[in-house]
Length: 465
Ligand code: SAH
Ligand code: SF4
Ligand code: F3S
Image (cartoon, rainbow, N blue to C red; front, side):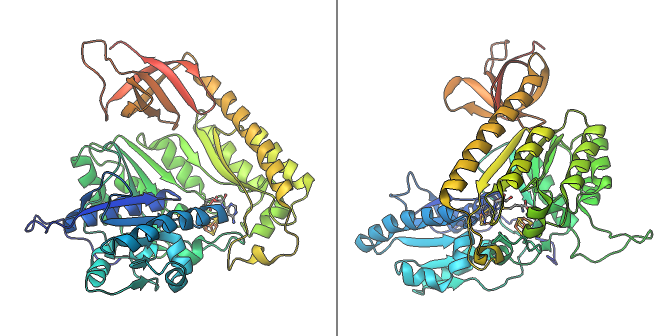
């Protein structure tokens, strides 16, 4: 657990000029959140954002190793920077994130030009690690680390939506997954620290918060405290109640949910608390009980279906998204077809799909019944086509309806439009003009009549006010 509350950022003496930095982020929202905090640290140290990757004085790759192709991408990026460094020894090269944690010292052998290799638990210590680099050391920071409360101000990519970590790490042991090995044990932040961060974000104009954890339903189980009724004092449900009334924050989301720990109380809280959006990201991974058992997921398809039924009883319009893996070792055609059937039966709004990729130091990687690449490609293609069809069918329900959209910014492909999301997380585009001579801006909540649908996005027109 994270023990102490952070002091508020102080307005100290200005930091020295240190050149420019560039961060490329791979992987999930945790990495994006870490990158924003690391960018904040670099700016506090006196670095400024570079115009491009090949002009920067410091390049940081925040890496992902969830599947082999994610890991390989990093090596090709690093190759080009290593070459640049041979011509320009003053370049500082940093590899952070999950490949850094997985490979550690081995990365230095593979890319000797690196200055710093740092695991995700060290993100908040970037400044002290760089201080050692400045003294001429080559640094590897991958030891298990108690994550410090973040005392810097993150440099956020959005001015409207922000991620707030509530629990780091994962104690599950899904047999395919590297995350527990690279992100370490669960460490929950204290509710007071989370609330304080949200209040700070609200004061700076943020309107939407996504609470983050690899297994967010585990929130609080490493914190002490039992209620008089004999239940854990700190749970995600309690946290939602504690942070719900932060003034200025209009929407709250959370991810990622685990079907094994998803509770009835949580569904009630989501239905009762108006700022909590009707969108649930609950990966199911497979539609077959035997495969789920081999994955060590700890639930059945029946339980998963009951959770979704219950959500829809309380919130009929809720959007449901998920992650799924096909071609897990030994998955038969019949088992794979059960995954397709579940997608059809539930009618998902969005599904992140992947073919199984064996990962170092995970049990399933050593199993003998690995499936050939051709089966992986075939299943993934058929699956993706189904996911798109299902998403389009779900989009159809919006046609003609008026939805509340939180504007996030301009449409990069059409300057005459703005874009934002519905409460159910559908990306929505509409004309930027507000009909009174002005234009909508990031942070506006706008009622939009939906006139056009696509599988994963909508277009419409702002309702006259
Ligand atoms: N904590 C989340 C998922 C984190 S990883 C959960 O429990 O659902 C994000 C997604 O990557 C997973 O949901 C899974 O679908 C996919 N994934 C993880 N390991 C994988 C592997 N070895 N091969 C293919 N996909 C994988
Ligand atoms: Fe990986 Fe399972 Fe933890 Fe999710 S719950 S991060 S899939 S080990
Ligand atoms: Fe990738 Fe690490 Fe996230 S492996 S998916 S960046 S936790």
